[in-house]
Image (cartoon, rainbow, N blue to C red; front, side, top):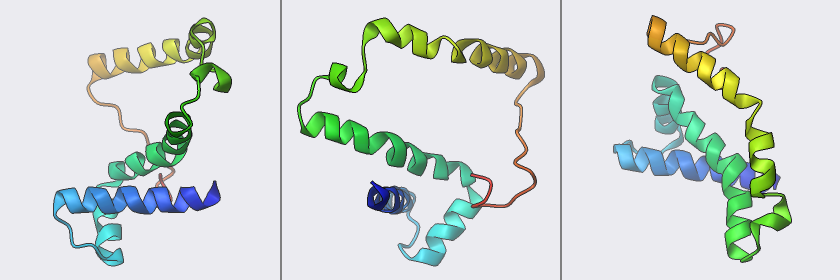
Length: 110
């Protein structure tokens, strides 16, 4: 699992760099992520969500084995819905809201 954390992040960053036309070397990858830190989010998605999904699809397992059921989906999502609505209302009312990350620079603010 830890190996996937590094491989998934490197794979995703390399794929994004290739799509953007950035030379594929370490310095250019870090420079790209420093200029556009939101791109690191995609690495997080692949790292955290990609492997379990890959295991689920490759093993042809039923999602219920991993606790993914309709009856518990609403119970799982219900706590996040009010916060999401509050953020959306604030963004619509006041424009885009920027979250400070303790004034840290990339990659510490990810």
